[in-house]
Length: 157
Image 1 (tube, rainbow, N blue to C red):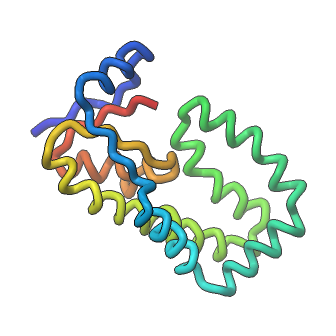
Image 2 (image 1 turned 120 degrees about the vertical axis):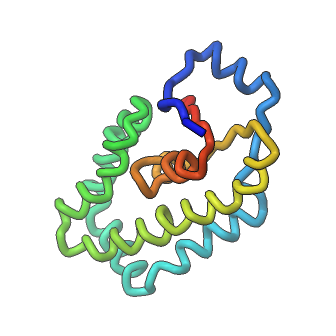
Image 3 (image 1 turned 30 degrees about the horizontal axis):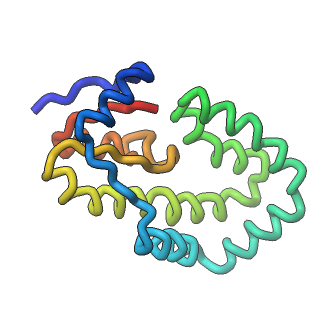
């Protein structure tokens, strides 16, 4: 089965996709909230403390990243969004191992869980899936995983 390239449908097409009977998959059901919390809990305590202290000590520098991050998200630039944790690690090299732990547990491990949770719904047919942008980019992202599984993927954001 060949999968088409990811395209961005027009707003009218997005509405038609939703109206055409796509199943809306609610990923933030009660179980997902607990799973999200457990992902943070899986980050080693030393990294949790280091990240919290770092956020408090550098809150102005981190706050200054908010608007550029939102602008990047609004452009739909997944590659730039995926680079953001690395950018912070370059600015604060002592924090690199802690950012890596955070990304591993909160993004990468959860992406694998999302893929498995989607398995049965995808077998049923057309599915609309909404997940955080950090779960989409790269070979280890949800889009690439689903394509490797043989599904046609249309990105609408």
